[in-house]
Image 1: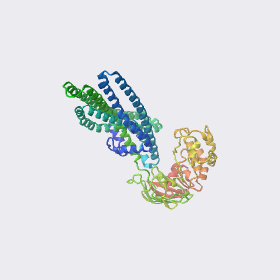
Image 2: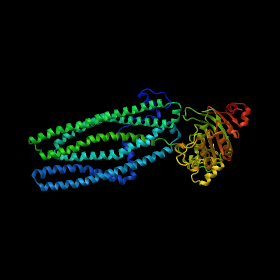
Image 3: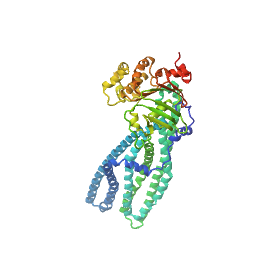
Image 4: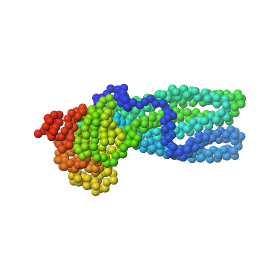
Length: 605
């Protein structure tokens, strides 16, 4: 994405980012299914949730009751000139007001605690789900989109639980209680208020689709901004090396312009919706004032005190409508966030172990491919009819041009993917019938660009065997003949590696990963371009240690430095997913085929 030429304006930018897996399905606002799933996250906190509902009901009743007390004092003691009655009315009002504020405090506190608990559990489940996603998910999903789910979208859910839900319930409850008082004060005027219902329904129906789409567009555009930012930061070295700063800045400017346009569009729709709600309320109040005033002046039976009480309640009835309009917008945002969060949670996990899957104890290490074909996309195979056997303790070298399928073979043996056709066995067990965890615990992996976690060098080495003692770690580094190189770091093996190992050189990172593999002592070992980042002098030292590391293990070595695989028991030469040659280093050189050509090209005499 970074290397693309500056794209045309908004339309192509949006299209480019919403292909296939990135497209979000159409959603329905205020989806009851999503609300139900969120409700399930409150079950562990049922006591807290139930007390909160009680306080919501009390809060809904209290505000109309405060208003009723004011109207009753005006209609009664004030109208009669009874100061004693006024004093008692004021005391009752103050007592109820104090109780109301206490309820408000605990309602807000419980809502914040409940929202935080739900968000905590959502993030926990999201992270746990991500750890078990298949490799294909991470290949097709941008990092920024994943981060957006874990941060922005979950925060929208927090807003929905903490604010929208319970504030809306209070407002609806307040309207209901106010409506009961209005019906009691004047049934005729209340029938006029009921005429507001179809107007509100029509307004809501007109705007809800626009608002739902606008909210989802805003969140999608923000996800694209986040994805581009994450990719740009990860690729900053390439960006600066190819002087792509201005081009990338231009593309990012387009994305944030699109995001601003979507936000402006959303604001315009919200402004029209809320403005019409408010205008509608004022018009109804005006009509009520005219009709109520006429009834009082014409002697129609309505008393001034009842009219005053009715209008007090009318204000309590109409005021929440505008608030509910705002909360409705927030609810759509929360629903869009929840939809995206649960879509991630609903992504299929890596294929589960079949019933009765075989739990492997320490394997001998015999690996056999029988007519194995494989494709990341089933319609486009990258491996074709592979047949070979790795006997226990053998070293198998995989060589060939880039894209030949070398790393795909390692992915299959580690069961990151399953064969599309054919049979792959470990110690005679079909890999489809093997418990994946029991297999992967027996694999040591050293890559060309290994990932180091935040922490110290020793912490990263211990990833290979978490229970290992410090002495065992030092012994592993000593056996690998790199203890002195690691000891030269500022704090030795206690040196902090920084984010992604940034404080270490490429060679030092590789040494850490070699030591990690040595400590793990796996029966199966994968070396994928493992010495490519090590300088020639260091590599010469490591070659002797590798002989120790490979001893007694079934090892698969992917290498472009053909000098590193001279002692392999079997060399497989791959071309476009097919084995075109096989044999030992000497046999293949003597044959003068593809391997010999590669060797002469990369290892000049």
